[in-house]
Image (cartoon, rainbow, N blue to C red; front, top):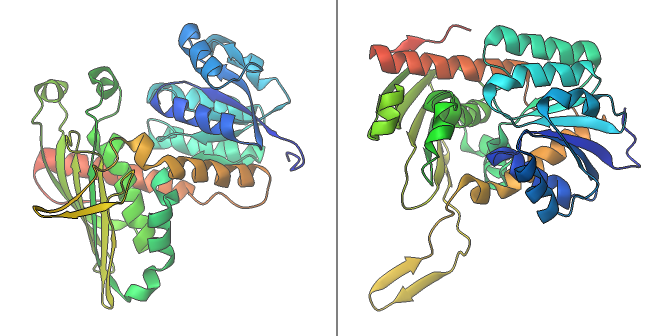
Length: 339
């Protein structure tokens, strides 16, 4: 167990979109020390380390990852590389006695994901799949107070992405269901405390480049739960007015609404009507606190102060639900989720 009296040593694999956010948060933390980054783009890595004044951090290539794993100062590894590299890096880190904070998914298949969790259990180290929406303060407050709604009958999630992701990223993203919808699936199941029995999805590709990949960019999904509750998810890859993130939960006693957030909440009342500023433009801005609080939760787990909140069951079932929605979209019919 890592001593709570010293800084936890951290290694980060991959400095893409998510890895750069995590580097920023680690650098700003008084409780963490960034010791290694695993990145083949040495110049890119050095630019970021210089920006965040991380002179003590060493850059190693993916082929030299063992150098980081053999360093006893490293308490945990953050895996932020493309999906096809997750399984190998997660297993190597766990088997080297390091905790692992992993961007979704843990691995590309259910069998591989289970193997990663078995390695975590056998090595006595935490493995965390970062569905960070759970750590958004406003959504967490909704979750904590949901019992006031009585019997929850409907959850509506709106998640429209901004800005449009780079095409090169979309090619390795795993598709909209496993890249985007998994976050809303996890949040809806977390709020309801159950997993859906049957799902249905309709979708379309408005963007020609996405169509050529065999993917879609606009999705409407329905999840049907044993309790009778329904969840509706509305997703788009291309919201040009901002990063649109809303959640509504309706129950027998009322309704909770988690609205879009903005850099400024000032409202103008003028002769021509009411106006307010633009919503946040990207996930990095909108979920800034979510990333920080997810990392703080994981650090407490590394220290043995609390258990990992996102379970193996949740991680695997969310992936199964996403796959079932993808199948429904292709077949045009309702699909029973095979748990």
